[in-house]
Image (cartoon, rainbow, N blue to C red):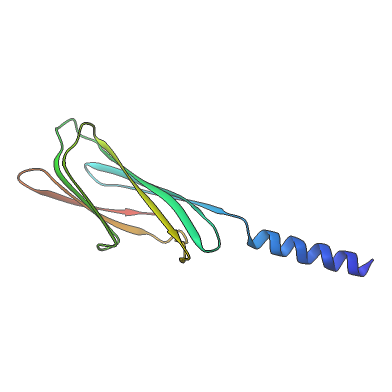
Length: 118
């Protein structure tokens, strides 16, 4: 009987270590709302950043820099005020819910705002 309980304990412990974890981070500035949603495995991460421009103005020359240049995406013109950026890695150390810094530049003259996704 003790062996059965020990076996069940080990199986439960191993299975708990193999499950995916979902993280959700969000932040806001004067002009932007942002969020990051990711499914993390033990050594992988599949996520998506979504940024929404809160004003009704036309967006041009948009540049989004995530984690001090870890990811940089640019657009000359946009048809709508919401953009998404996919994020994937395998064999990596997934994000653990730590804050993510984002810098957004756009327009002419250029405007810059920073967000912290927490």
